[in-house]
Image (cartoon, rainbow, N blue to C red; front, side):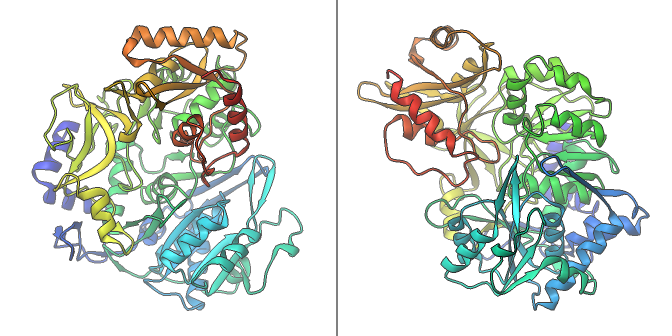
Length: 628
């Protein structure tokens, strides 16, 4: 069965198709009811099935004779530490921690908040929760107390599991003062606070009354066996916002998600059991859940937990060192990481230092990858860099290429074709499907494939209004896109990234593509700012590559001319501002809304997701002297 045939089968005979895929994982009770609806009429998969995710990720492989295979590699250049764990060792760590949680009175259906750094204990904790049916919510380590408070108050955890500190490059970030503040501010008091002591410094003064030591709890607890849960029992919650107002907790099921993870690892990422897969993400993001923990482990791949930065630990060759040292077969990261490496090592000199013969594929997602970066990667690495698209809500790819079938064809700047189970269409604002090469709203016909969100935690009206109301019978992604005559989809970005210049709707992502094609530019963002005459005008904020000595004004002139040549005078791009760095989230997404607000001279709040707050002041000073 080839890719297009597989996709068509998933649409024409969806129940049979996903029943067949579900047989690739082991169930305690295989579902008879493949596709049904919940009490709100929303589709759900495998409702009467029973299984356990922790069993699938650990015990199943031990039963099959792979207990001594390396399951997890921890590589921390920021602390100089490496550790490896076999599946047998993983089971020991996870089952004892699960036993410890049971001893504290936690049981199936309870919730836990994890506020932890990039260490193996975070992965152990996620799997321990899954083992006994506790619903986990991982919060990005280092978020301000307010971010913890809104999640605690929304999901009401019985336990909060944290560590003494995270490490950002050479800076220790103490977690316990942040946790103590959050506990003080939250409406609902958490019964148990478990702390893993990283022993980076003498930190006794940071502890507060009532904490439980993680290692003591593990050492004194009897191993807990896995408990079977219903297919639609929530495995985890993942909040997609929460900087202001009520947070939005995406609910992930167990059975559909397990099926989707096994399917995507085999067919989309094309990786075989026993190979090494590295997703350079954080546990707090959807990628960290799906492709650092559950996807690789369910597929019996060795997964890497990396604590560091792509260009600073110690240099821009860090990624290639990890790939070489641990014989990584397939990697997944955000385009911004590759752009950062390209900026520091434009000629790819550091790549030549390492044996990358095992490295076969590079996947990119998180935001659209520009052609210039793809070209750089192709020139210096010589392996496929495959862009794809999905959301926290879907949990796995919705657009991409099924690389299991070796005849897949990459179209640069495209996120690929719809993945089986996702019937993707491009609509106009009235809900009519558009022809090829016309930009519109990216929508997906219900039902979504298995593994996509069950809804928003305790708030179906919000789920319905946010995703299901604009085009009844369809899920609205919030993104704009164009489909070509071959079925490839080009995602143009969030629909609010389209700007209106004197009545002309223009895509900022298209302008970014042109700006980034300038040979001196490492990365850029284009945003629309307010203009009394035209309503909005575009501004490009760009970062030059390392070693570029050309005058900024000259570069700005070249970019303006290039946009005029490629898009036309209608684009009205006359403002280009060269900066040292762009503000980004910790997951690598450019904070375009923040840039837009700053350029408009409006009051703004620095997002809690920002990677480095000092960039804001850099941009502010640049705006002061820029002649808009």
